[in-house]
Image (cartoon, rainbow, N blue to C red; front, side, top):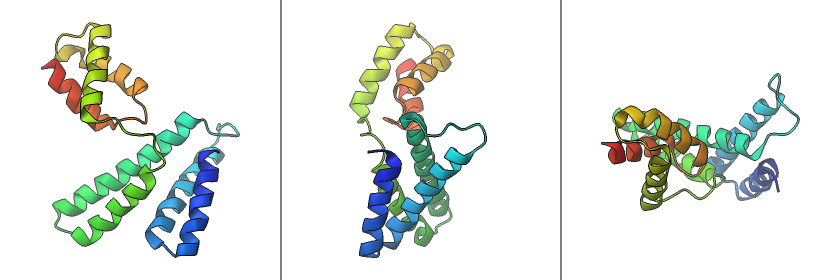
Length: 149
């Protein structure tokens, strides 16, 4: 079942249960997928990778917004954003734990032969490609910095 079909099923469930947060979140995903499909130069169907990137982008946007709201002391605005993150994130592949991420990046560092912070770009490029959808870019960056310094 494609991501769009999964979204439609969940959307119907959310409508039946009158879950406003889920409805808003699912409609945001559906909207982004439609925009990506209709964008000029886009192919008929989105690949799984493209769908994951779109969902990751939505999760990142919500997390960034929540962080800004918390920074400004607006918990009332941050909480709905975090609730949406939970709903949207269920459409991402299982995220790697911190230990799994460290092990994976350590392997990449060995493959690339990185030894200092100068090699961070090489490691980040390879890690971002291989871990697409499985880990947040920020988390990858933090682990790479730890292991290279």
